Amino acid sequence: MTSREIITKLIQGNRTYETLEEISELMNESFKSVFNEEGEFIKPNSQATQE
Image 1 (cartoon, one colour):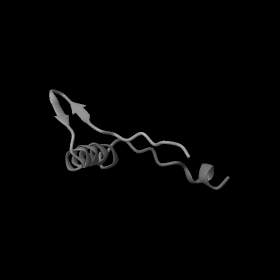
Image 2: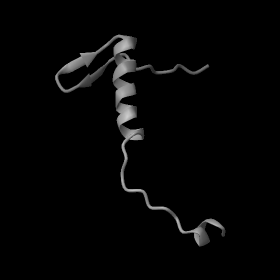
Image 3: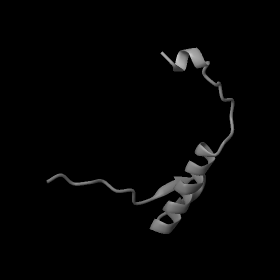
């Protein structure tokens, strides 16, 4: 059986996050900023998607 490493704390700027709730909130905010950020989207042409 292998052991799993877990995240015990995160540091962002001058603040340390150590509770599961704090870490979850910090990671959620980080993921939301990545996945909800609208950027430049290049739509593939229909010919390339049908190949």
